Length: 70
Image 1: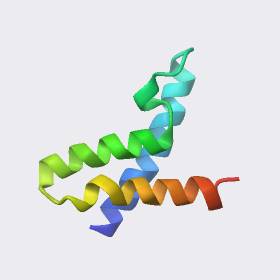
Image 2 (image 1 turned 90 degrees about the vertical axis):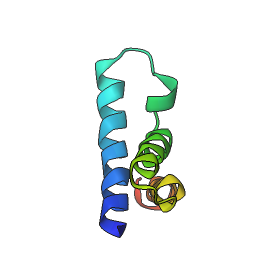
Image 3 (image 1 turned 45 degrees about the vertical axis):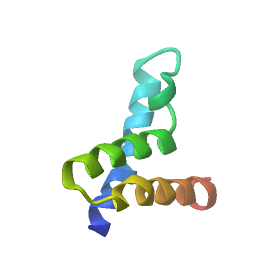
Image 4 (image 1 turned 60 degrees about the vertical axis):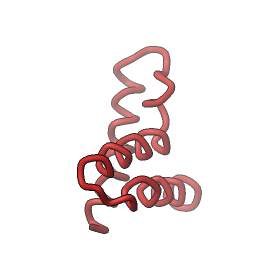
């Protein structure tokens, strides 16, 4: 479960970079990694029924962005 949450966070970083390179102007819900991790976590929670997928990938992405991503 933790590995899938880390995977969602990593996917959100990669997908937000891809969205910013493909489109000229930012698409608001898909332009930042935090937003992308929230929406993909919400989709995973709806599929699996585990409500931890909603906020834990968002928190992981927030911590990585603030403290580790320089």
